[in-house]
Length: 199
Ligand code: SF4
Image (cartoon, rainbow, N blue to C red; front, top):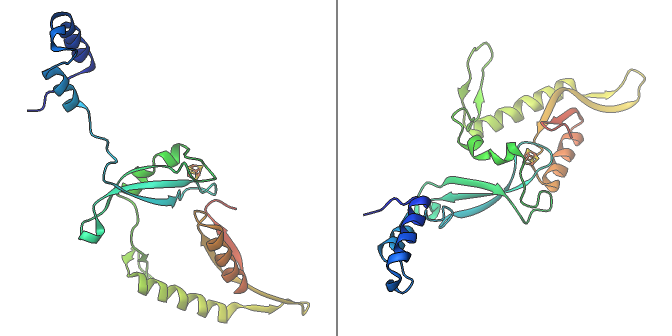
C-alpha cells in the first residue's frame, strides 16, 4: 500500500527515529521505504523526443516535444511535455511565456487540425480532405493567375506581376524551406507575400 509522506512528516519521523533507533545502523526502516515510494517517478521516462520549432514567432526557437505511446506498435502517441531545446543555436533551451505554454496550444480544443472550406454562398465551414484542399487551392490559383497576370505596365515596361492573389507563409520554418517558398511565390510573379511574424 502506498503511504503518502509529506516533507514535514518525513523530517519529523526520521528525527524521532534517529533519536530512538540509531540502532537501525543509520537506516530508516519503513520510513525509508515510504519515502522512496512517495517520490514521483520522473515523468519523461520512456518518452519519445521529437525536435521541432515553436510556431509562434520569427525567432523560431527550437523545442523538444516528449510523447508517450509507440506508433510502431499501433499505439496513439500523446505529447505530454514540451521544453526548449538546449542544443538549438537560437534559444539554447530557453522559451518565452508563449513558447513555454505550447502544450496548451497543442491540446487546445479549438485547435484546427483539418482543412475546411466555405463554399461560395455558404455561411459555414465544412471539412475537406487535404488532397481535395490542395487540388482546389492549385486550381483557384492557376485560374486567377491566368486571368489577372500582368506582363507589362501602362508604359510598356515588362513587370510580370500577379497582384490578385496573396500568400501567407509560416515563420516557424527552416531557412531552406523559406528559401524554396520564396522562390516559388516570387517566380510565379506574386507580389502580396507575408507571414504571421511579418519578416
Ligand atoms: S518561444 Fe517565444 S520567442 Fe521563441 S519562437 Fe516561440 S514565441 Fe517566439
